[in-house]
Amino acid sequence: MSELLYEEELKALNRCKLKYLVIGGFAVNLHGLYRLTRDLDLMIDISEDNLEKFINLMKKLGYASTVAIEKSKNTAALSFRLDKDDYKQIDVFLKNPINFLRAYKRRKLFKFGKTSVACVGLKDLLAMKELAGRDRDWIDIGYLRKKYGMDKS
Image 1 (tube, one colour):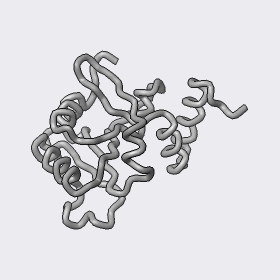
Image 2 (cartoon, helix red, strand yellow; image 1 turned 180 degrees about the vertical axis):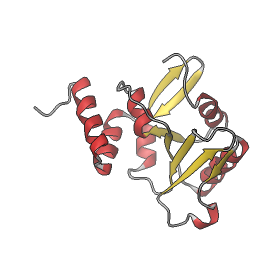
Image 3 (cartoon, one colour; image 1 turned 120 degrees about the vertical axis):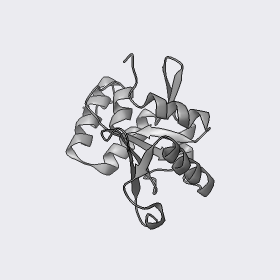
């Protein structure tokens, strides 16, 4: 991958020193299974300060939430769409499926040019995929286990 989709957004997250982890399909791509994924899924430190910083950054980058922030208290995740480019979408968990701070300590950093990307580690990615349990997740799990010699045969 020579060019990174969402590179501008990831650079902005890094500049703000926001604690985040790339998860979902984008993380699967970073770990070596190249498949089409349109959105960027993130897990962040959901402390009030960090969440507020994230929401303000999304607004600054031109993203708008599909749900009013004030009404999102019981929502598991928020989606943000880029106003000027409707195909770009960033989803962020408000209720993290695994412990964020532990996963953050085990994160894997990927480099694209001068951009560092904080990605969920392989074992945490597999655990999250197992929790989600969709067909696409089981395909990803099987491929990644095989790629990294973790298949249960």
